[in-house]
Image (tube, rainbow over all chains, first blue to last red; front, side, top):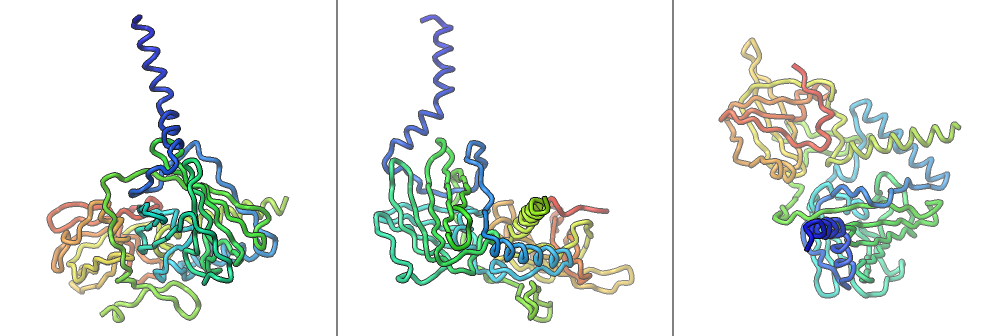
Amino acid sequence: MNPLKIITCILCLLLFMPFFAVAQHAGLAIPDITGVWERAKDPTAPASQQAQLKAEYFKEKQRLVQAQSEANANGMPLATRLMQCQGDGMPGMMGGPFPMEIIQSKGQITIIQEAYTQVRRIYLDKAQKALDDIEPSFFGHAVGRWDKGVLLVETIGIKPEVMYQNMPHSEQMRIKERIYFATHEILRDEITIEDPVVLEKPWTFTMSYKRMPDYQMLEYICEGNRYFVDEKGQQRMLSNDAIK
Amino acid sequence: MNVLKDKIIWVLLSLCIANATLAHHSFAVYDSSRSVTLKGVVTKWQWTNPHAYLELDVQDATGAAHHYVLEGTSINIMIRGGWRSNMIKVGDQVTAVAAPTLSGDQTGLLLEATLANGQKVEMPIPAGYIFKRTP
C-alpha cells in the first residue's frame, strides 16, 4: 500500500477513535461505571445555567448571601451545616471535591462520597414513591433505569434545609439526572432541578468525572470537630481550655 | 438596568460564597493578606477529620512561651497531598507558616511546615492560593 495512504488511515483512526470509544460505551445497555471518580474538566459539556428563582425566593437567597458576605468580611462567618459535619446531601454530594465511589450491584447503584462518608442509593427499575410515603432526608429517595447507555435517575424527598449553593427549595423539588459517558474517560452527570414552587423554570447544570484507577477510598469520620454554632448563629472554634 | 446590576452582584457574591464553602467551614476567619512564621515545639498533633490541628509552644525574645493553635485541612486531602500522621510527634521542633486569625487570637491556618527532619510540606488547602505568604 502507498505509504501516504497508510499514514492517512492512521490519522483518520486517531481522529475518530474518541467517537468510536463513546459509541462503544453508548452502545452498551449497561456501561461499567463502577469505580472511584473525581471531578474533571469537561470542555464539551453543555453550559451550566444559573438558577432562575421566583422573586420572593430570589430575595430570600439574596438576603442569605448578603448576610454571609458581611459576616465573612467581619471575620465572623455564619455557621453552616457542613461546619457541623452534616454533609452536603443531594445534589451537593455529587460535586466533590473529594473522591466518589460508584458501585453497581443487582437492582441498585450505590454512590459513596468520601467527604463525610455520604451514601446514596439509587434503586433500579422501581417505581418512584409518592411524596407522602417518603420521610424527607439528606439524599432523598432515588430510582433509576438504564436507557441506551444513559442512567436516568429521579430523586425526591430532600429536606428543605439541605440546600445546594444556598438555593432554597420546596418539598416538590425533583432532581433528575442523566449519567453517561461523554467520552471514553469522562463520566457526565447532567442534573436538572425541577421545583415549580421556587424556580421559574427547571435548572440544569453538569458535573463531570474521571476515574481514579488506583485510588482506595479513605474513611472520613468527623471525630475532631473544634467548631460549634454560637448563640448568634456564627461559626466559632472551641477554646484551648475546652479542648483540654 | 438596576435589576441586571443586582443579579450580576448576586452571582458574583454566590461564587465567592461557593468558593468559601469548599471546605468544612469558612476560612474567612483567617487573614489572607499576610502570613506569620512560628518556630516552636509541638505540644499536640491532632490527626482527625474534619480538620487536623497542630499546637505549638513558641518562645518570644524574652523567653516567654506562647501557645499557638494552627488548623490544617481534612486529613483525607492531606494524605492525598503526601502527608502522614507519623510525620509529626509531640516534642518535635517545627517551623510553621500560617495565616493568622483576624481576631488576633493565637490561632491560624497552617499553610506550610518545616518538620524536625528538615522536610518542608505544604498544606493542600482547597483554594489555598488566596492566602498570601509575607516575610
